[in-house]
Image 1: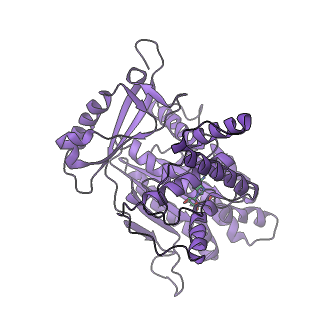
Image 2: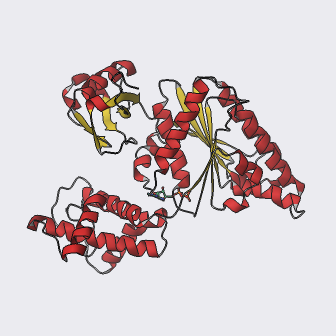
Image 3: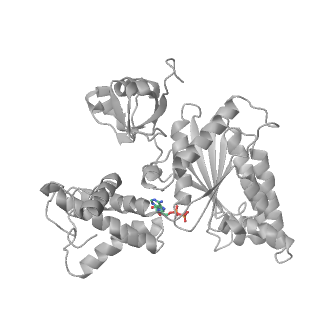
Amino acid sequence: ASTTGAMRWTVHVEVRLKPRASSRFDTIRNLVHSYVTSFERLVLPSTLSGWEDIPELLSSVERISVCEAQCPTASLKMEEMVIQAHVYQPSDGDAFEEFSNSSGSRGEDDDTMAASICELPNRSYEGLWDSLIYAGDIKMKLLDYIHATLVLSDANVDFNLVSWNRVVLLHGPPGTGKTSLCRALGQKLAIRLSHRYSHARLLEINSHSLFSKWFSESGKLVQRLFNNITELVEEEDGFVVVLIDEVESLTAARAGAMAGTEPSDGLRVVNALLTQLDKLKTRKNVLIMATSNLVKAIDTAFVDRADIIQYVDLPSREAIYEILRTCLCEMILKGIVASVTIPTLKQVQMYELVSKVNGRSDVADGQERSRSIGLRLLALAFQCRKQGMSGRALRRLPVLALARYIGLGNVGLAPGPSSSSTQPTAGRSSP
Ligand code: ADP
């Protein structure tokens, strides 16, 4: 939207408040807006500094970050942007409530909950979005989908002519971050929609325990769960994100029932689920996200209801490099690994290209160590890719590497997190 006709990008700026900040959200929003628009350019994404000089921001704000946008360049001039500042105060991590299997008749070992609920945005999901790294533009694609549904809802588009179900299905191998992505997306939405909704909640349904534990009761249970969801959704100033994890365990049942291999209880559960989903689709303030490791096992009637069916693959070599790089940077930041600059993906790709062409690169002496670590990390990423490692496996790789290093008798234990020690600790033998 531009008066000059030139393209302008919407850039979201997220402003996280300190735990007991007392300033008014709109005061902070206005201050941040004027502060951000005083820049000539912004790097996307980036964390801003310098706002600490403004006393009212200093007393209330914890962090100001500029989010990524779909623009083709890594930075934009101010006149190319429309800034949208979102001020939020995350709830504390432990604000979880749980739905039990039935009204008061829990058996002794029935401590698995069918569902849990938490307030969004939540402190425990801070940073999750940025930590998830994918080769394609999965994260932006999902955000754009939500944006599209909001535009259509706001315009009161006739549902008979254009319709959608508010259901997103993520599927792919285990450990590829599907559940985390749903939570992170819920968190993003809660932040971005905070001007429309006074609160947001994430309700996680554990299909596995819902279905397998109280098998014959499950139909009723789904009904009761969705009654709860409907109650939540009826508060029109609240936004509700429903996450149905491992949805295949719920819906495989119907196929089994039809083939005569499963009792009809399974059928009832799935039918209950589908009916309830259909009821929710006309509500503006709900989003349903389901994950599955096995899309073939999901009932086609469920798959059919998904507006987006997104395959989440094992990470590519480039995504692996970024995952390992962020692991390593964290270990450096916390003083466990000796300080060294790990090249960004773009830099290391450049080093790789140059060394393929020239045999070696012409980096300055100081950069040589950084270059060589980057190239080794890239080679390691290639090995991990060949083995088909998941994001989950990659994020624990540094733990195993450090354990092995300690096992070789190399390390006393790591210095405390506040240590600014420049002593090499575990840095030499890894990655
Ligand atoms: P899934 O639901 O696909 O089994 P999870 O969401 O449980 O996967 O992922 C577990 C953890 O693995 C995440 O919290 C994250 O730390 C890590 N992980 C998985 N995939 C990725 C990725 N693409 N980028 C970064 N971290 C990832």
